[in-house]
Image 1 (cartoon, rainbow, N blue to C red):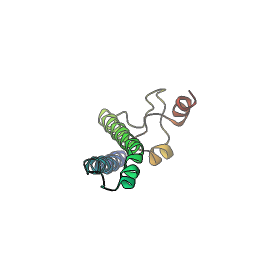
Image 2: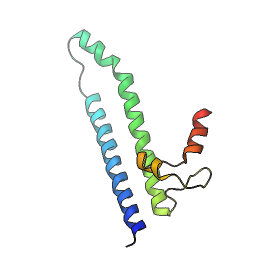
Image 3: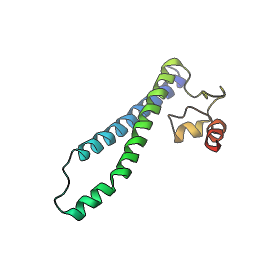
Image 4: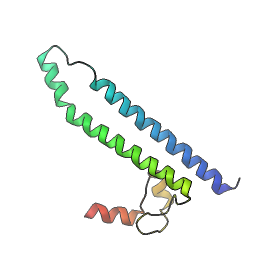
Length: 114
């Protein structure tokens, strides 16, 4: 096994670990959502006020799981680290910071501006 294969194995392990962390976060959110509201009306108001925040956290975690699954598919296809938009190599620093990145910094920045 060459150095590149070892590196891809490490990337896969890191992606799987991240996916597991996000899946646990979603499961925790779902468990709390099933909990009954407090009897105290002020506590109920506080709990209901947190619903939007919890929904945003769940959406973020779910989106990350989708991105990680796509990155794992790119690993299997041999296209991991290649920008899905322009075909250039995604920088090592970007992949180190966000291993599920599908785009290089330039393409991701272009989408953010639009």
